Image 1 (cartoon, rainbow, N blue to C red):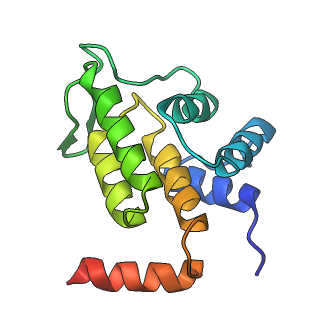
Image 2 (image 1 turned 30 degrees about the vertical axis):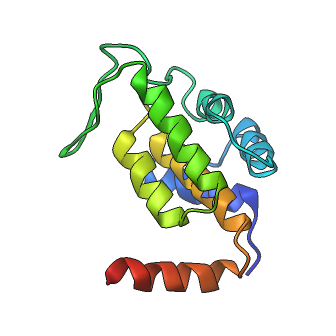
Length: 145
């Protein structure tokens, strides 16, 4: 089985209930994102602008969201600082599953969090010193303890 960026975007979209082929812009933006050496808030904003064009970073008061039973922290300037702190931890090699959980709890964007969070997770997984499946296996066991 061969993995492609297009396959990743397709599956990530399906998780969100988006049942269509990925757009060329989504695939290109994801490829560009995964090619980054470091990831910034600006980089994630650019990715979300492609995934969910009408949505944005929740760095202003009133940009509040609720997803199912999860009520994300209120929109405010601190959201951007919290997101930057998560990205700094990701670049220092903190476990990808922990970064993903914290990213999704923060829910930094008005939409596109699932897809951008999975892209960030994959970006981090590419940097893992051991293979993807090996890393996933041990993360899963560790998280279950």
